[in-house]
Length: 168
Image (cartoon, rainbow, N blue to C red; front, side, top):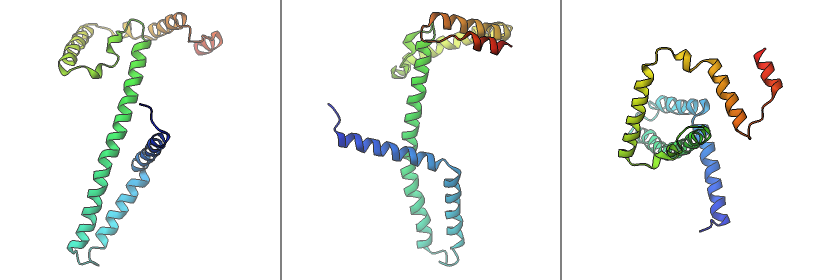
């Protein structure tokens, strides 16, 4: 079913609002503002004789903000998680020799993920047996891998001038 224009506008508005709110709440200005509010509230205690109403103001305010922030944080984490998964999927898809079965593994069951985890634990144990990391992760190996990738992928543009400049 296609989304109507009003649904799209509402989603765009919410997306923009959520992004702006996330950016602001993670800023120094937001922290300083929150600290200032707490300090002003604490300093106003003697004026209001530390009454129940005075305490209720900060309790209610912090409860409401905390309640709303839970949803904002979850939305931001969902978006970040999806972006990271897409980046990882791109790396897997682009890496020659990598298993495309790893793309979208977050949809697997816990048991299936455990099986994959055992596989990679075994690979890690075998890698620890290698004595010298410089053999498998040297600059020469990195340059050779890059050259192989450039030659085999039509989407990459190879510039001899840039290669010559980086070596000099």
